[in-house]
Image (tube, one colour):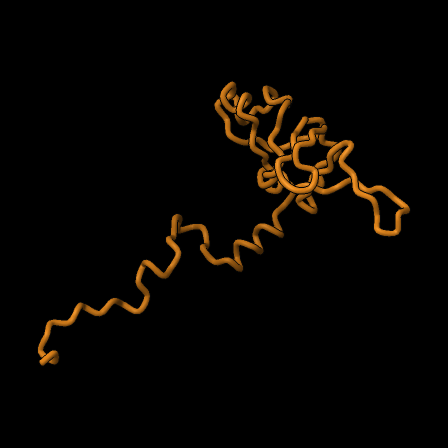
Length: 139
């Protein structure tokens, strides 16, 4: 008869396995709130969000993994249709979280214009940079 067999203890309705782990009491774990904070971030915070990883040589030289990208940094593209190309950053468009690279362009569908192709910073390892002039990293 199974009715008298010991039953495993019932788990609470909200076990820690189902909820995301809260890392800080002052920061919300809510997806909605974090997306709102990301897309309404001021330009000063967008600069940090738009950080790109350093190349392996620069990473070992400076012992820093990623830095905020700037105009005139040289980057290589590691994802997308322009993979393998290298170029210099022409603009950092913080409002759209996008970077434009020299000689990486696309043509409009009607053929009238060539536009700078927009890239995301994490897909652009920095090859050369004025990295020693970053006061916050090397102070």
